[in-house]
Length: 337
Ligand code: HEM
Ligand SMILES: *[C@@H]1O[C@H](CO)[C@@H](O)[C@H](O)[C@H]1NC(C)=O
Ligand SMILES: *[C@@H]1O[C@H](CO)[C@@H](O)[C@H](O)[C@H]1NC(C)=O
Ligand SMILES: CC(=O)N[C@H]1CO[C@H](CO)[C@@H](O)[C@@H]1O
Image (cartoon, rainbow, N blue to C red; front, side):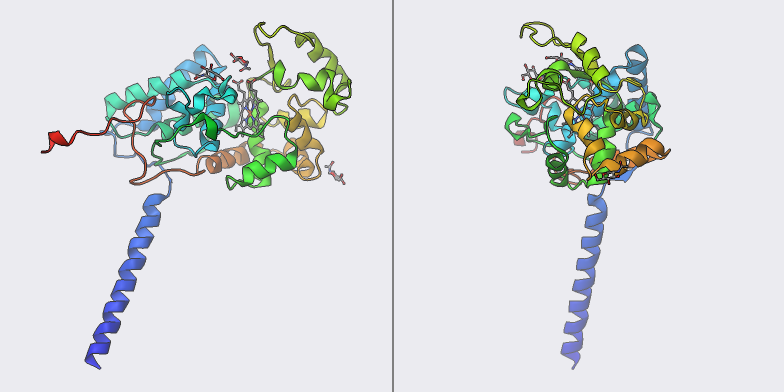
């Protein structure tokens, strides 16, 4: 009897400590708000990033769109692990969709200041997430609390870059988002990122001249817009010519607001996928409610937080890079031996 009681007690405490370990394990593994509080020599990590983004933004508001897109591209390829920042002959940033991604220098500047404040503490992946939030806020999109605690990854391959195409249908795009654990409504909210920024003519020229090989423009585009865009994007522009770009959201190119949804409901989406959101029965009702409601900003912030949690590295996974461009060098064992 005594033995079996002891066995039961031992089994119980083993199970209990297992649960505890498991539980704390899960806690540590989760991202959280204010992860860096008290970890950076009493300096405010988010305020340091914000000061850089604000100065760059005041100088060039265009930087906001670059940072928001940088965040999306980082998170969608290999998770939010700053893999997009790694240099290399065939790293992610060498892949064609990187073309217009900008903001790399803003991240570098913030990282420089943070390494001075507290070396080896703040991940490049978190700097991207914080900077994207600041970019949204500076562009009038309101402030959402960002989660932190990400670590930087080791893998960055152009061959892993499988971002959705601007010519995807809603269901193709929905598949791509669901592979990242992001549902249909959040996809509609996140594509609201196209409320700011620009698009190269090459990415939608077919809609102006030869949609689906019909020799005609895309019938879902407002004919006045077709005429206007044809002037900016000639049919046969030599490949060598500087690429021309147009406002993604004709109503407010630099402001994060719900006008994107109003525009696409009027046939004024620039990219095919944007226009499709307003028409496809899978998403048209969500688009209508975002266009007519006043909850877009709050919901967009929450969707950005979800995007920021895609396949993150936490705890002892990955590393905190010294330079956002490079993996850390392996530590020499001679130092200790
Ligand atoms: C189906 C998903 C998406 C597709 C197909 C897509 C496609 C594109 C394309 C083709 C451009 C123009 C790039 C160029 O001209 O080189 C663009 C720009 C942009 N995208 Fe997306 N995108 C998607 C989702 C998102 C998401 C989720 C966000 C952020 C939440 C986002 C934010 C932006 C921003 C801010 C720009 C403007 C960049 C600038 O002006 O520098 N996109 N996107
Ligand atoms: C269009 O592409 C060029 C490179 O081909 C790039 O420099 C430019 O930033 C792109 N346009 C936009 C809107 O980002
Ligand atoms: C969305 O599409 C469905 C099916 O075509 C249609 O019945 C519905 O009225 C549309 N909703 C809006 C808001 O246009
Ligand atoms: C910043 C960066 O690395 N940009 C690269 C994007 O991809 C093109 C090729 O597709 C490279 O030429 C750029 O250097």
